[in-house]
Image (cartoon, rainbow, N blue to C red; front, top):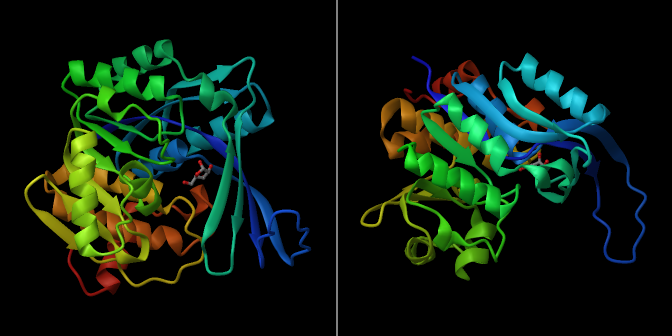
Length: 311
Ligand code: RIB
């Protein structure tokens, strides 16, 4: 039976600019390179990743009543998402992200949240009727919506996974019920704890600090090209990243958390899930753009075989 994951989160159209140089304040740069409009948004990226990796993916978000909204909805349907809880907001425009990617693959993103800011309690209440095996969220919708959804899920004993992107310093972590997994990247870890997880010692210190801020069974730090760090309150595991050719890091974290959630539900082993998520992150960074770079289950099986490992 496929695992059913409800993602309550954001959807954006990404204005993707591949540039040679990112301008400084007050500077105009005429850059060779390319630009395109690509489907993205942390929630949509995770929801599509779940579907491509073999899960049943239910998506709850808000789009604007505009051409970007219509385009994104059609894409989600084509990707096999359950879109019954993808609502159309009559007032706010579809979210838009401006993304600049440097030749190294590093990105800088500014999000105009638009209709993502209108995800509300009624949307969440109806989406919870889908009876998912897990609830996945990011912080790209209002904090009140994240807390409401987490509380609904907790009442129904549904495991809750929170990807802490984009971290909001003032997010009331103490109002969240017990989570299954809390997963920030390096920047987000530092925003919440003041500790940069640059070394194994600091990963442990940061994880322990997180455990005082938010109650979770597992803290999974996403460390980019260093892999991930898993802490369960007692033991830790450092899982190195796979070697890969980095083209664009956009959506790698969203794909990682989606894969971590799906594989954990499938096998109940957080370390195995972390290795699988590392592979999904590695394949995602080797492609350009958010949704277009997300791998399928067979892409990952092939990638792991090519590395001479077993799944
Ligand atoms: O994590 C990458 C995503 O962040 C992009 O697709 C962009 O839309 C922003 O939400």
